[in-house]
Length: 284
Ligand SMILES: Cc1ncc(C[n+]2csc(CCOP(=O)(O)OP(=O)(O)O)c2C)c(N)n1
Ligand SMILES: [Mg+2]
Image (cartoon, rainbow, N blue to C red; front, side, top):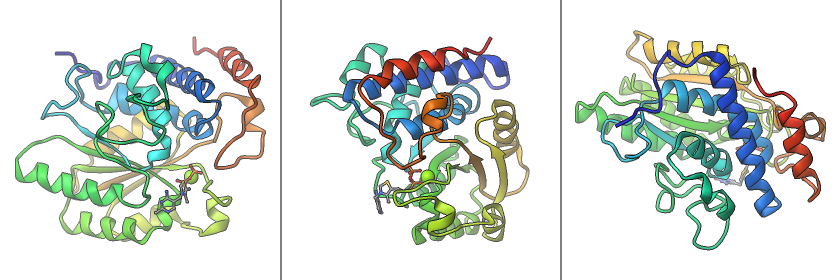
């Protein structure tokens, strides 16, 4: 059995390469459908590289291994990013990339547990992932299973009351095996999150709810590695959150400059261009 993550062994450059590969795969999948939440995928790729190649204990050939760390995708619309990471990690075969979003594919456009190996929950109805994570973390503790539960959520989900009910419950139950990761891209369906319903100061709110909170540049691999390590090793009997400030479309400047919107429009002839622009900066 092989562990995908070999904690502490991959250099930051290796992780940057993994992130680059995740971005490439997301663009290729976007091209298959002519659409997809590619802006989010490009933004969160560094976070995913650190999750799948540094932090989480997983077995690619046995996604249901009882000892695995659980990775919950609260934000089902980010599925394209997770499939890219799953393919990079060997959980899904790369040949399936061409099936993205098609009938009978194992990679539907929104993340669903019953379709995809490694997909722990059906996300997409926003604000539910953290509550599910609380239940899973409690269950693991009761079984004396030392696995950790990670929940990737979004800044938009910080506007959901259910998120804060779950946050309160997690600290009440002293869930030191629960790690929330917030992709703070300052974007949601109707505009910038900070302008729609600001959750600032974000770390202070989590701290007030009893969590160990950190905020990092979510496109800085070194900062992410340090934050994930600190989250895992924190001695307090409390849940942990890593707020990751990310840039939508990161790595493809002509898309980064496009008005950041929830659904970035990419013209049919721009996918190949996006790929070649991305490849101009392959981490050495
Ligand atoms: C409970 C719920 N309300 C509304 C939606 C519709 N919706 C889908 S994505 C989205 C944006 C949420 O913000 P965020 O996840 O931060 O979006 P992004 O960063 O991807 O733009 C919304 C409102 C939903 N999926 N679930
Ligand atoms: Mg957002």
